[in-house]
Image (cartoon, rainbow, N blue to C red; front, side, top):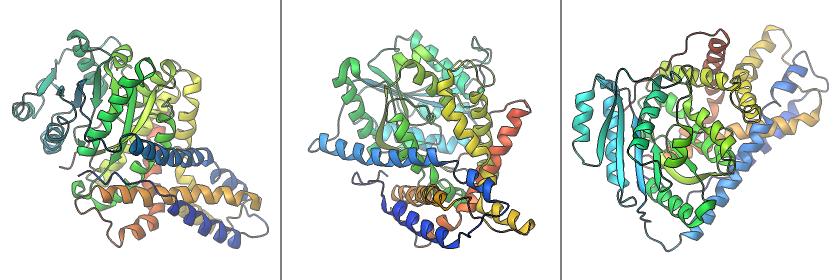
Amino acid sequence: MGASQRWRPAYAPLILAYLVIVVSETWLTQPHPGVLGWPLTILWTWPIFTTLTGIFGLSRTRKRLRASARRWSGHGPTRTGEQLIVVVPTVGRYDTQPALERSVRSYISWLPPCFANLRVDIVVDAGCEAEHRIKELAAEDGRVRVVAVPADYRTANGTRFKARAAHYAHELRIHEGEARDDVWVLHMDDDTGVGPDTAVAMARFVAEQRAAGADGKHLAQGILTYPREYAVNRLTWLADSARPAEDVGRFSAWTGSGTPRAGVHGELLLVRASIEAAIGWDFGPRSLVEDAQFALIFSDRYPGRSAWFGGRCYGASPARLKDFFRQRERWSWGLAALVFNGSLPLRNRILLGYSVLSWVIGPLQNVAVVLLVGALIADPNTSPTTVLIIPLWAVNMAYVVWMYWEGLRVNASVSADGRRRWWEPLAVVALIPVFGLMEGLPGLRGFMKFARRAENRFTVIAKPS
């Protein structure tokens, strides 16, 4: 695994899609808007800020990769003596065990050449279903240990779910004297592994921060990818093409610019242990997206101190469409709660609120839904109120095409054969309206559950091995 270091996100799909869309939209636009004119003018223009941010991130990623290649040209694999602690929380069920074993073995295989001082902490609830198998896995290598969270453990704020486990492990590191500037904590999901490129990119990032001294960064994140061979459902795998594209676009723009107001992922999240000790994970019983909340608190306390690096981690798409929906629903539910969390600074919630609203209204923006509504009201005219809007519509739509096209290229490149099937680029573009509903409907459902103040639940989906 580990794609070529010569990879760069491409502009060509974005430019080509823009030209095709702007020409076709201009040609199809009628002289006067219909009933849908004003609603569509607003709905299809709404994502423009996210789009422009993503394009900026794309440009920034290309520059960052070029700069890194120049800086490290002629160097072999970087080796650092600073301690790296990989934290892997797991629900400890039998159906998640195969993916956990794959992930943990990847850490032991690929990280030691770059990190001489390595430890892997598998964090479980004491007495979990697969505890004996997890202990057998840990016994395979002395650098792996099991951190069992006692059943009676309670945080000061009553935090539950994954954040409770993360906070227990964080308190344990403080007790063991590891909350230091020269200790880095790598947060990973139990289905997400690493490759040689991950280790090299992280080691180089750590070396750069050591050289920077007091001006060094405290947090960084790379690219989440999905190798084809880990996918048991081809539809969800194609739908997850958008995720690595988001990492090289929108997340690169925010996290890479120093302040992760767009949030972070719970995997491939590298944090200085001293900084994590100052924030912790005790966010209260309603926290469902602890990684995003951590990012917003970090943005307030340490503006300008986050970074982006070009390494990848290797995860698995949901095995079933139902799991895909449940995953997105939980994210939407948790992010909506953060938007209305008055304990967080308003300036750090505005962007999140914009993003959540974009997600929630997604079904209304979907071209299939719009065409259906037009047919039902016997007015299929989708022309905007002014032709000046068409370039904005075109760039929004072109960016979505780019996300799925480029994300597919990334996911295919990290797969065993490293190539896209001939039909996959065509399928991933043709299915964009379907993917929009797959993302938007659970997003809307999650928001409605938050609005109804339903009991929040952290549902752990089955992880393909």
